[in-house]
Length: 273
Image (cartoon, rainbow, N blue to C red):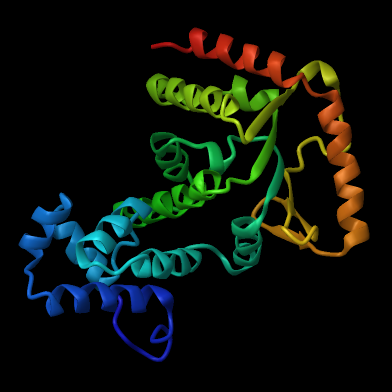
């Protein structure tokens, strides 16, 4: 439970939890009544009000509709979700949420393209055991980032996936099939381009080093290098430009978007349970 104290009294998560309870009580509704109006479980709603759960965007949208609060709860939720990530990642996420162009190179399935089942499976495989509540919170936090691909106007996004991303399945065949289907669907969305860097391309400048490049509406750009348990946000324009050139080399070595989609669809068929 999130209780007010000197450490969290100013946290967005605590404010959100308190506001959820206040709105319900002002409306004179019980948790059971709110559950009936929103189609969400009473116990689940109680955990939102105590701060035990962070929830997902559709839940906040439903509660905003019920309470007639416009986008108040959605805005509070967007601030609260940042607290679920480590400090080193928060600034990058703030940039990512405002980016108009997103370029990524990945050696794992990018969080922006993960299905809920896949995210839950990989997040449960960490070296440190997590409780079911902690796992669900991590899943919600990861999936919440995907809303930026659906906003209006949506950013232009390009993902270069190392071929190993598509060739190394998780053991649950249905989960893996669903994940490949999601990648194939994303590749056909108008604002998303996906390219596969094949094994035949050999070792490249960024091989094995995940990279994100983000451009803002004012043409400023940042780069983010992700390492093993660490990350580096790069804001210096000259250094960002160097990483952009390295990314361009990867793009030139990758399969075309058309051929990449053909390969992904082939793997979708081969992975069918």
